[in-house]
Length: 80
Image (tube, rainbow, N blue to C red; front, side, top):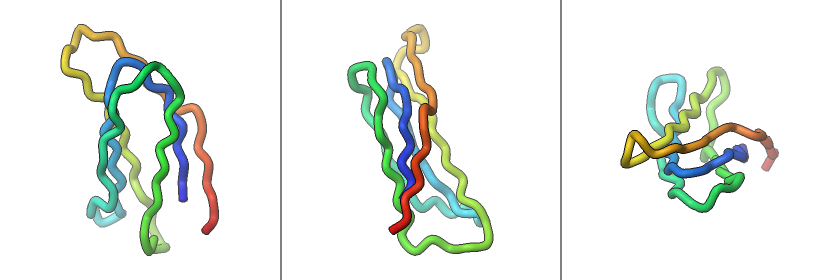
């Protein structure tokens, strides 16, 4: 289990996790909220050793003139 803590203000996030072979294992959206630090929990069922996972967080906004803020504040790794 990995928890990402992201600063969010004025935008939605698309979150995806891909395996080394490019297969997407997690994909979801974090909706726009009031400005805050948002906890994004990621749990990969049956993780496979011997490679790495790619985590992508993309800001989405409907209006390119809209101001937004995003930033990674912390990463917490838990064993299960």
